[in-house]
Length: 462
Ligand SMILES: *Cc1c(COP(=O)(O)O)cnc(C)c1O
Image (cartoon, protein in one colour):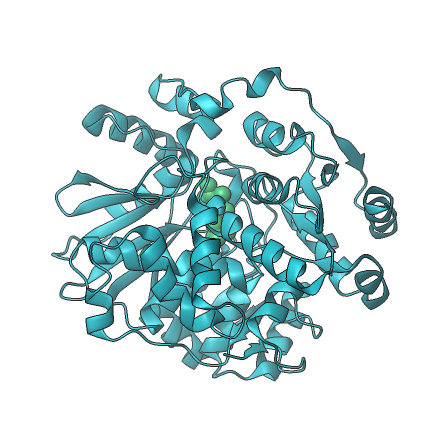
């Protein structure tokens, strides 16, 4: 399987090289040249398999050039051993034909662990085989950074520097990033919001000399391997609800469009997904885009679901590449317009977008009311991101197709909002019970490229 850039100007790469480089040299994102497909029989045969065995069958076509069967099976086994639930991604019923897929049973209590634990093991394997080391720099709205630090801490082939927006992540998220004591991981509190962190990260990747000097690698959701890892739970969830003999719909709380794009990939691979619903908080650029075709940035409004406080949804570029028939030039043009404010989709692209996706947005008050109502009617305690998905799922027209809302974080990651909404202050699970007693290590930095580059060089010098 070869990987090509969404902007059409970078060389195509193997899975291994696409994973290690993250962003393509033309500024685009890597995407497989064609979608592998699983037959109806192959999908039916996933029923009853462990998560790891199902993951092997879904992921293998994407990585066959890089890992042998025993290598991939070993990587999957190590990746998911740290999950606290034997199903890895269990399904909970919350009403007639309404379900929640719990993606938050990994070590840092958010769905980012599902992909990050896997790519930690993949990076380690590939770098050890090559005898190389890399510097991973990531930008986070909270959950990616903690998942990356947890997945890569202590690995000797990798240094990790994570930029997070100062004062805009929850205390639990910050402490998960700042308390690991391993010398190869560094959390940097940057001035600005998440989009600023992500923009500086992109600037570093676009600086060829710096990229070479520190052997820069990326694990943000622009990394194809992250999206790929997330395709798996759409399959396992749909199969437990009767796919391929029965269609299933999903509502996905969306920020950077990585998670829901994985759902789109599952559909392209043959999984009978009926509807894919984009759920946004008050930062609703994607919802507005589906309604009008106009994709224009507004300022970010901080919300109770901070991991979705995003206006530049980086994985949307992958969907644009699909909507524009793999025309790299068209994507490049749109992204240039976005950098100065926004763009409007062509009629053809908009009607394709509307054929593939539905959308809804959820206000702050609705998020809080949903947490309360869900607790009162089912006893389930939702995090605010998961509540956004549940609310938007409930707003969809009723149908005979099961609707799965993705629960992307554990309520204990956002205890203040949850306590305010439903009066329950969720406890951290035992492996994190002492999080607030551990010592923090924080580096402060301005929103300034030169200063950030100097910091990365200083932190990774050996
Ligand atoms: C990252 C994150 C999201 C958004 O996922 P995207 O792939 O960026 O769309 C939603 N909920 C939580 C808890 C997250 O950490």
